Image (cartoon, rainbow, N blue to C red; front, side, top):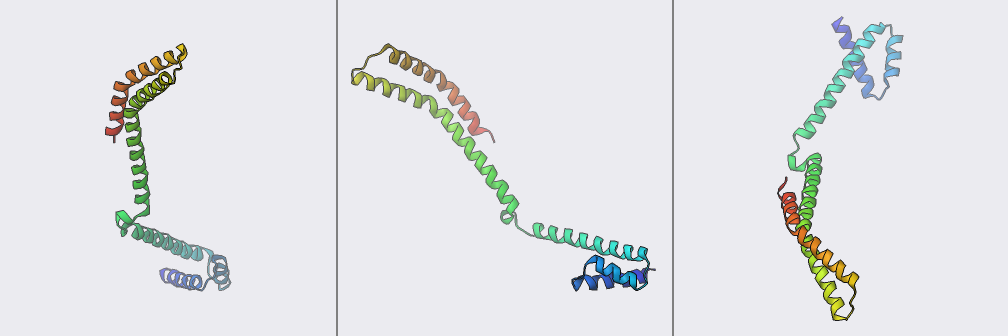
Length: 151
């Protein structure tokens, strides 16, 4: 029985290497008088070997590739670097925002005073902007440092 299966496996391999389809190989073997069970067993052996060879080849491709050359690792590294860079930028912006707000408020207020434009609305907006900037100085610094130090 084992010898017959080995013969069938060898014949099927030969047919596959010649480019024959499984259906064509099955027909030819059936016409030669082989039992359907023997044919099915031989094809199971062939397909199991093909699956294990494919898995082995895939494993060899990824396992022999250095980590820095592995495209999956590179993509993960790039994504991680982008996220870290984004967090760094966010942290710096949180720290700088209150100061930018205060400088902007002072600049606009000084510009209106220089050109002689006096309006109670502008004065209220300037005072409110300055208050928001003063409140955000400690908050921005705390949030900024948290974003910069988190990994």
